[in-house]
Amino acid sequence: MYILCSLDAIEPNSSKGFQSPLGPIFAVKKKKKVFLYANECPHMGINLEWVPDQFLDSSKQLIQCALHGAQFLIKTGECIYGPCKGKALRPIPYEINNNNEICLHITTETQVEA
Ligand code: FES
Image (cartoon, rainbow, N blue to C red; front, side):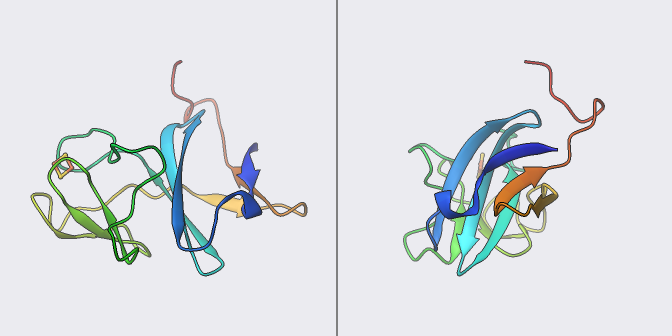
């Protein structure tokens, strides 16, 4: 298990980027629920954000790629608008431990070489 951060480190209705053993990922907290995705736009495989920790559109209802404006559902990662419509962000499985921390499942096969 890899401890990513405390659940409280992410403000409600906001997003946060991380470097992790799985590569760059980001979290979105909607109300009290957290969604984790690989920071990799399905359009061109690049990071979604230009400004650190800003992965949401101005309404904070959708995830948005800064390069060509693709928009994704927060709950499923499905792209509903833009050049990769119909594709989806890759979800990152996690669990919350007893200390209220977000933990990733890490195996040697899933680690990304630094
Ligand atoms: S790289 Fe994300 S929409 Fe083009």
